[in-house]
Image (cartoon, rainbow, N blue to C red; front, side, top):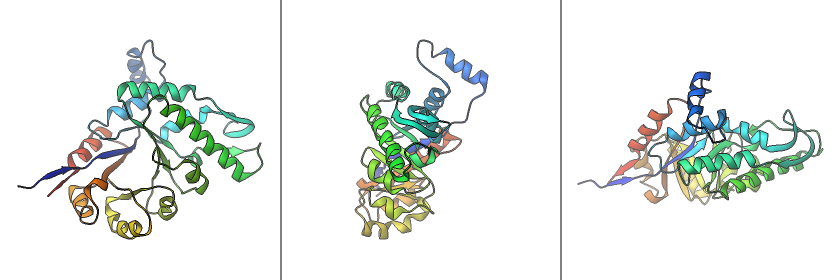
Length: 261
């Protein structure tokens, strides 16, 4: 009889559309006595959709709005004064999500996706380092109240961001792996994230770099079995990033995340 090996499912984020005013008002009725707003609603809905996910991540690109607000010295996304951070709102979010699901991660855009510009420091590299360092400080504040880690959704591999931020508790998620510089990413990150259809790229990349974990995006059971032909199942995860229809998306991914041997 075949043995079934369950593969962990990891979330890289779950996008939530802006609700109608009546939907938000109805939800807020149940939040009396708690600090809550539109972003809190979207965080809650993103997490609720991830039932059964081994490593859930509340948030997505939409959560960048909250982090933009946490950076001080900005005027309309332009740094015009001494830079700083105010972690109050993100720490409140962290406590709220941890109360709902202990150990959950958070997902948000990488620094280069926030669209910040400099009119104060006068040096592009120093400005990028300042923003990345602010990210690191905000992430640490959230981890201090129980957040397990952060997913940074990225459109490009930025070496300054990777050098300052990449690690076991901050994972960069290449939103478009087909065009992303995975080689540069793997110089800093041990997680290789590939669409299931690009599994064929994995052996060469794993030979060039020290890969700790192979994460296939939206795989079928057959994709995981194919990966297990050249990596130990303990190194495998099924990854997901949902843009719409999320409850069904995550349920289907969880149901398919196994290998028969």
